Image 1 (tube, rainbow, N blue to C red):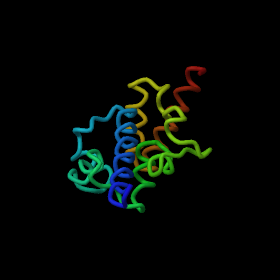
Image 2 (image 1 turned 60 degrees about the vertical axis):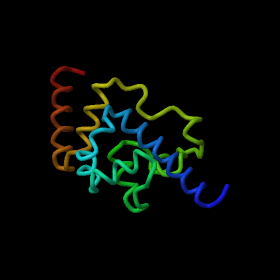
Image 3 (image 1 turned 90 degrees about the horizontal axis):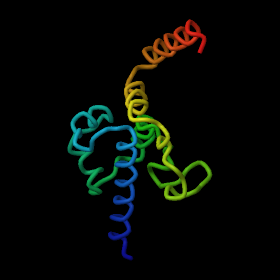
Image 4 (image 1 turned 180 degrees about the horizontal axis):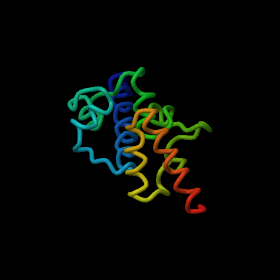
Length: 131
């Protein structure tokens, strides 16, 4: 395999993981403009990531992984904490319902102050209802 083939394979593998993370959050690949705003890039850049034509800069990947709720090493290289490749592990959100994924996705878009307020409300609700 030559260098160009190898580079394209890396892009294709990233694209697969990126699309899986979007799917696990219940986000459509067709929401490129919205995703671009969320990730701080153009919708065209997101389309290229989805299509395997490009990858985000290595400096941007940690933030993208955080927003998607996946490990940076998994998103970038296909490895989890234990060093296993992604096909050897279950996706992080497979056990969540679609509604749970949507709530998590929306929660991650909040500022830290907003997220803290939501956490406080949840704690109060749970205490009030003895949960």
